[in-house]
Image 1 (cartoon, rainbow, N blue to C red):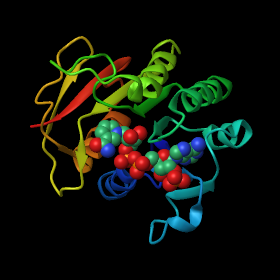
Image 2: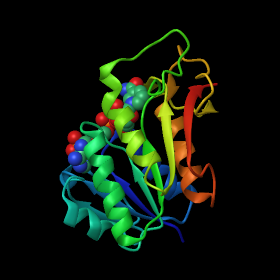
Image 3: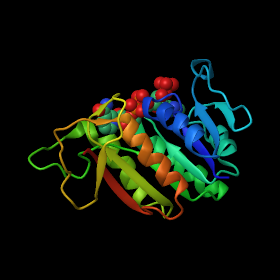
Image 4: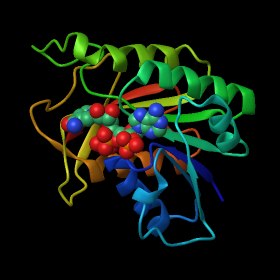
Length: 197
Ligand SMILES: NC(=O)c1ccc[n+]([C@@H]2O[C@H](COP(=O)([O-])OP(=O)(O)OC[C@H]3O[C@@H](n4cnc5c(N)ncnc54)[C@H](OP(=O)(O)O)[C@@H]3O)[C@@H](O)[C@H]2O)c1
């Protein structure tokens, strides 16, 4: 049974992914979020543990990491600082697998587009993760919507981002996250663009 720690578990993609993990796998989930009262109606009490905490709280994060197989980070805000805390806690606890949600545009991989300083936290976080030595996969979605569809493709770092003007569903990104988390060795040390297909 894979043990998955979801950081920022009240995030929109994270909530879709949580439901998919529960419906489609026997993974054991630890939901880590800043305000647990927000999480209503999550069933499967034997398989779900909920921890109230901030990713910037090193001690709480280390406690949550202990014994996990996979860390899935679905965060916003000070992503570079968050990435540093996550990498440090993973090294301290010996957890190696990290899936980290970033954004399209961090490598200037979108033909004809430059996203300037607005993406710096995403770029800097990716840099921290790529230099961590951990078994990471960075996920770089296109613009997101909440459509009830799974329709996506991926591109690798170094390739132009495919179909960048189309909006991809959060459900598609969640599908990719679940596959990455549950498939041993999938896309290790890679950074995937996720586009609408
Ligand atoms: N919108 C788009 O089209 C688009 C496109 C590509 C990429 N992205 C990026 O993809 C990422 C995930 O998307 P999403 O829609 O799932 O985002 P979201 O709903 O904004 O979720 C982000 C989560 O991060 C949590 N968080 C922030 N700082 C935290 C901290 N210090 N400790 C613990 N939790 C913290 C927030 O918690 P609280 O609930 O407590 O605030 C929130 O639940 C975001 O970074 C987003 O910017 C977005």
